[in-house]
Image (tube, rainbow, N blue to C red):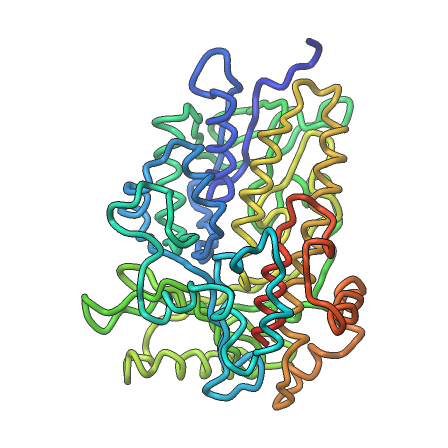
Length: 463
């Protein structure tokens, strides 16, 4: 075979880098001479963003494919169960305003659409409680499985909450010790091109030039390869999704036996929302907001007020970390022999935990469709770009859905989110259609949609 793909070089670590390394190394036998060599190069002093603490149920399959023990994962990554999300104060802002987006599909979802039957009796119970039992599990503080349920199996569908920093280190250890990934801690000082415009190698401070047949950019917001080297344009989506800043804090529990919420709690604020994620040893809490609608001081005040019932006077002193971002994504994600994964490809906002699932989906498609030679790489790249352009658009539509259904008019933020010019055309058309019929399988064209019609039902009828 001419120009075979035998060496994959991943630039950047963190969750995106190590998940991608693990998925590819496991499937392509990086720990054997006959396999594909996987090398991960990361800077020794660039910390990862490290606040992506929510996952999708897909993570169970990803970890299992990598040969990871779920028990070890729970113990090492400060992990807990996630059974969905509870959205509070998104509709009216009142104290009794809340609904669930559970991870269990509506009863009989593959065969029957239960929405018309619920609509006929909707005054008796919420949609989620009518078609799914999972909201009840969450409200009662119950788990999605028992101690005797096998690893990765479930009674109720579940994902994870986790400590992102510990998760990256856990993946690093597994990838290097079990899967044959070569790990280089070094500073990247340059990018060297081949005569055809491909990346031939990256230059490093202490390890010289590091070559590869395929380079994966996991360098976070800096997008060292796809953004800075190849100058692939970044497409902002701030005109649709306004949030661009997050303030994150780690909140201790009141006592060692405090209950751990098995769902993400998303509570709307005056110009954004607060996430609340329960881990075994602490809560991860953060306020994501629009800097065009509220300043840092006001956002910090809302965040500290949110945690005050737990911490009392200590809420004034707990340290807060600020993260700024531009919502959007690259124009293309795979160019020449370079593909971006994670924050290097783009970021929207933490709502519905879409960041980590995009890493999973990207790593899976790269691994499953890994081009055998450079001669067919451009074909795979074209398919990858088409698939992920579609996926990013659908995620943007789904996230915006949470905002456009609000009845809140108490601040300019909520009013602006409902302005027609901020709503994507595809979503506008679907919302018009759904005035007459409920979301169903026919409304989405891909066999592997990021969000199934069930998710749209939970949000639409929850709100």
